Amino acid sequence: SQGTDEFMKYRSPLVSRYASKEMAYNFSDRKKFTTWRKLWICLAKAEKALGLPITDAQIQEMESHAEDIDFVMAAEEERKLRHDVMAHVHTFAHCCPTAAPIIHLGATSCYVGDNTDLIMLRDGFDILLPKLARVIDRLANFAEKYADLPTLGFTHYQPAQLTTVGKRACLWLQDFIMDMRNLQRARDDLRFRGVKGTTGTQASFLQLFQGDHDKVEELDRMVTEMAGFKKAYLVTGQTYSRKVDIDCLSSLASLGATVHKICTDIRLLANLKEIEEPFEKEQIGSSAMPYKRNPMRAERCCSLARHLVALMADPLQTASVQWLERTLDDSANRRISLPESFLTADIILSTLQNITEGLVVYPKVIERHIRHELPFMATENIIMAMVKAGGNRQDCHEKIRVLSQEAAAVVKQEGGDNDLLARVQRDPYFAPILGQLDALLDPKTFIGRAPQQVSSVFLVRPVLEPYKAKMDVKIELEL
Image (cartoon, rainbow, N blue to C red; front, side, top):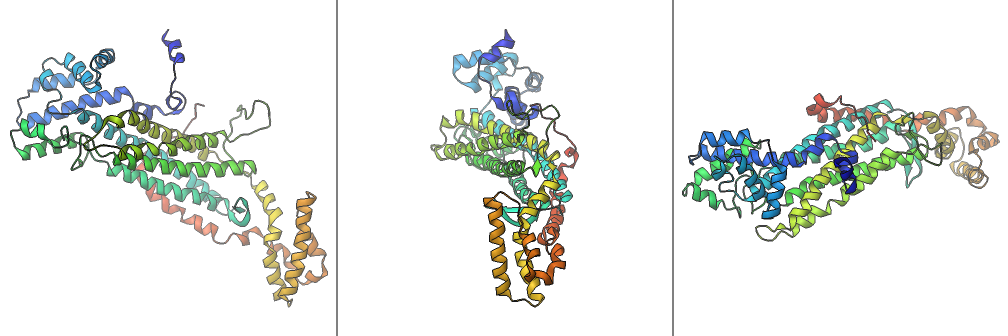
């Protein structure tokens, strides 16, 4: 019945449909509760080292049961006690009878709860950062490959001056580099809550160590180091400041905004048939229209990025309504908003890596679009050439204006091709420069310094250096 039971209740699609195994595990019950046990062991070891009557046997017993959690018993205890931490203290004590009296000694629930959250946040960033590095790497390769390929630039989604396919990708890259900096900074700024007691005053530990302030400080330092953090927050209430969650989730929401912009660009370009995301041989674009190739991966990224941005409201409001030393109305919210932000960012980056590894460019389509628009853009060049050949600027401007209006009418009212060039060639006025027309209309002369700007892409490479070992991982999308 287990197999069918799971289809009888809601499952988060973030996990059941999309997320990587490592990120799903990072926020799992097993990771959470084994981390609680490891933190209780760290606390006992440090307390013993600083002279409290705790034995090696008690610590060994705790260590030997760190992983074997009886989840059924813990759930039963929580039903009775209405307290998740005490339920797990009892469950741990049940398999550690010798250590039972000293488990959680001097600690408050937030000792395990908040410290574990900080570990999960740190480990979550460590999963995301290499994925973001790979997306940046793939995009940098793409930018370099197409550095010189002229393409229509758009402002207001109207044809504007030419740019290059590679230069446009650099706009995306620069945003990602900022995201890389934001995620790295949020990760490196994380500290441990440490051992702070029920209202953050460390009173219980001062009592345990009979008024020895140095030992209480040392206890905090030792446990922080054992948990793999360089620093602890100097002061806390019962919880670490919920502004920390704002810092973490804002870096992810900002990444969401970047991704939404880039994937919208890809969707717009797919409509123009200039660029497409990879498409599997047997993939179906539409149940009704067999010819369709929908940019479904980019759409998925936009869809999830919207959720990632929306989640930002949670930590902002949570931090703003924490009363005095703490209130519990953060708990249910954080159970959802913290994991969901990381899971969503994780899925987006995996999908985006898949997209950037297989972007397809259609140079002939791009060329056709340029051909339709370039004659209008080249009018300034034609005027200059005519003046050089002895013409009058105002006369030339008027001639070109009239011919441009006529050509525009053919395009817009008759649905024909832009024939401005043919009109210029037929008009005897322009005879002195007919031999120069091809050169004046060479797209390469309209792209300014776009290729040179792309060549500065190599500047992103040092940012990727720390993730070099994980750079070759390929992404296969399940769905």
